[in-house]
Length: 264
Image (tube, rainbow, N blue to C red; front, side, top):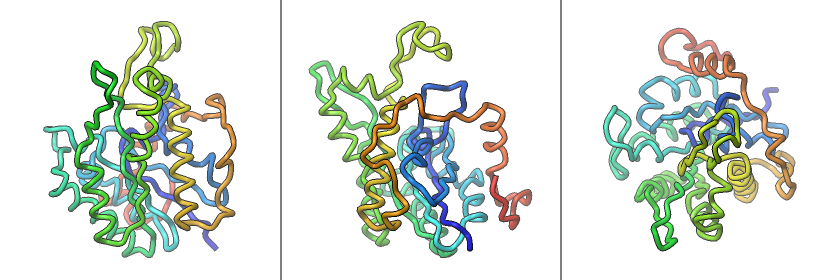
């Protein structure tokens, strides 16, 4: 009997990072730390919108490999809002249209779709007030979830509450903020208001797993460590050549993998 798998479709906030990009971490990279007895298949890719992920065959790969009883967690929005280069979607137009394709595709294969709103970016004004640049995308996803009776994990609303509590200074410990010389991958330092480092990603993944349990998406025995402290040093990174291989292989609908059912 095939074991349950949790497929992830999403953007850079979800994806697993190669070793050369440490300590940047997507929450999907560490979701397995809170799940047991089910395999997390993280097919999320940096730079993907709901449109480009589908049009470049990445959803097709998932749908070729997903099986009845598996879950498909879908989280887009950070890239959908960027104009140009064929990735932009209107929140209440193409964005909702594409989200429905993920939902219908999973359900047609007997799998269970779950929509996950994107965590918010770190944007504060000069007075320390937090802004919400994602705008209407989380609302649009909530509307699709309600209209199609899809479980919704509202990571966006949860993250906003956390970012506000941490404040402009405290959130730098959650996002990829590094001083020059602090990490060999970023010798000149970095100030990234979109991507998380280990602690931020671990807490987002903990919330996602906890909400999955709370909503009964998997039975309680599938979850672990929901109250445990997991150090950043426990996070595993893909070797760069493995990352590149997976990026190339996880594209379906073009003949190479169609119908193979092979998991890479």
